[in-house]
Length: 134
Length: 108
Image (cartoon, rainbow over all chains, first blue to last red; front, side, top):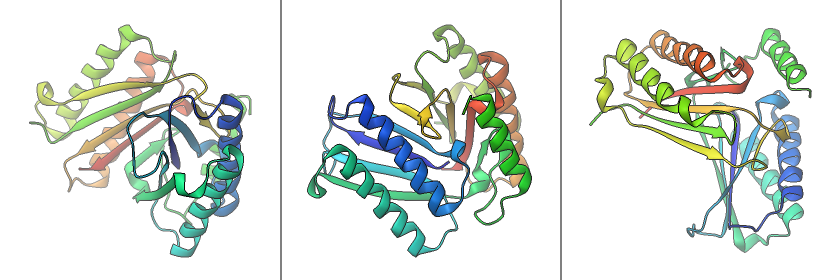
């Protein structure tokens, strides 16, 4: 977590834009929440089925952050996606759903609740980045 | 119909096809041990994220996600035991590292 799934029409977003969106989402999420970079997942799901809009951001985060922060986060993510891809506002919608941190294990550790992150958790993130060459 | 199911999402090329049946068996066995569910009834599905479509930390990802939907009301100790056993099994069979795996056990 966080897990951001971008549902997009087939062949609509080329690799360079996908990589740029992934970097932007990571920057925005980490800048907003202080979460380690290596915990931010972004995937693109090419889908021929129609949602309410052709492009859809389906995000999943740890529960427990203030409503204002969550709303700003979603707004910033969607703005970045639109800027990078050129998709218009009426073609793109999104949501962020939440679940308890304690329901997920990542890097062999149960995720801490927002605001309860320990130095050990951040240290593990640095080790993970080093192992990944990041 | 089982009250437990698993959805496994992997990066293309990271988990060999011939390992998946073993992974599914492992998930069913661990769930039976920890939660007492009948292993034969537990659905497990696998899907791949094509290369170039999955990112972690802004870089191409090699991470697999194992998402379990379980019956609600278990204690955190039980949930954690389930997730840890799944982590150990998945790493052993797939050869991934602990940093290439996310496991969740969410209330259905």
